[in-house]
Image 1 (tube, rainbow, N blue to C red):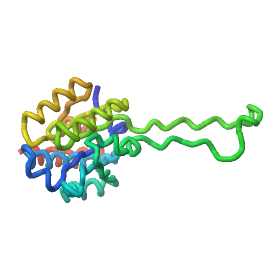
Image 2 (cartoon, rainbow, N blue to C red; image 1 turned 60 degrees about the vertical axis):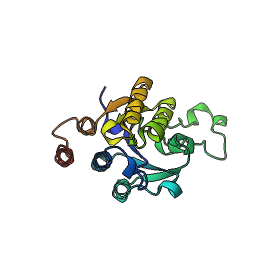
Image 3 (cartoon, rainbow, N blue to C red; image 1 turned 120 degrees about the vertical axis):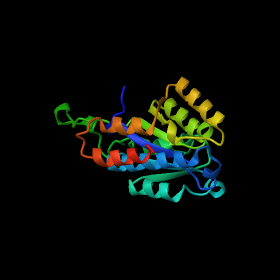
Length: 211
């Protein structure tokens, strides 16, 4: 099973100014998160961010916050470690259509009744990365799985204060049914072909991370 760009959304969890200095391999992790945000913008994918307890940990790193906003995304301020408990699911799914107010279509003869529009399903594959891997990233990813989203965890854009906690999170997420991928895997699966109109620009972003 490959990632489908048309079915994907990107969620970037808690790359905050007071947290990132303590994160293992923080420069690499942030650089990959930025690449993901720029790729998503090039491919016109929805991009969302979160910040945990922003009064305590501050906002997201400015470059990343700017990339989220440049892609047309919003950032959810939360207190729960699982962002789903603070309303992330409402952003990821289209709103449920309410029946029209006034008049009861069922009272009309059948041949005059309008068929209900098909319910929009939205994008069900969530590509997610963030910090700390064993806390907010993991709990949010598990929450997404509980809500029956497909979850793709971008391992080289995730970390914790310690390598051991990061790796334990990956083990647990894989066991729960999440797909573990890398930034380059995401890039080339979103593209699928070298004939994609955005191939050249995405390739430039990939090469930035190859050093």
